[in-house]
Image 1: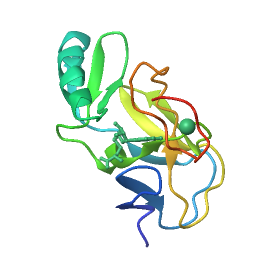
Image 2 (image 1 turned 180 degrees about the horizontal axis):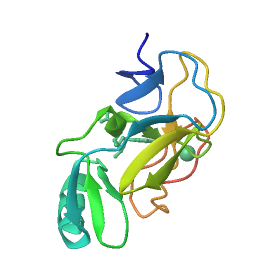
Image 3 (image 1 turned 30 degrees about the vertical axis):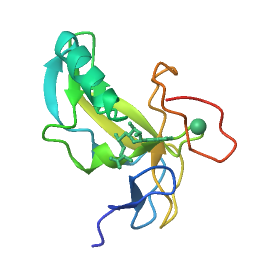
Length: 133
Ligand SMILES: C[S@@+](CC[C@H](N)C(=O)[O-])C[C@H]1O[C@@H](n2cnc3c(N)ncnc32)[C@H](O)[C@@H]1O
Ligand SMILES: [Zn+2]
């Protein structure tokens, strides 16, 4: 069985994750793994990561954040898009990346980081995008 996804150089930024076979809508593709840390710890780490233009911390709930820079899965290479083909879904303390629609082999996976534009990183999801991550 071919793996569902693979990491490759991205058209959006740096590394990205691509469909290695067709993926059906709502499939749980991969979990966003990493170290579970408090929001306070996340604020400290995130500002250090942002100094190098990187975002790794994903809010799990009002208590915990997942830092994929430490012990992360391949999910950490999935880029943001303003018109994504995936979405995040939290179940039993696990952040899942799921297919928002049927995805064809070779498509780059993306989801909305929902960072509400509070970083200075210009979004490159498409050439004419004017948003920030
Ligand atoms: C979780 S990482 C994704 C993997 C990253 N492309 C890499 O090579 O490590 C998030 C970082 O990827 C970049 N990135 C993701 N989506 C982007 C987008 N739509 N536009 C510009 N940069 C993006 C930003 O540098 C962001 O901080
Ligand atoms: Zn965009």
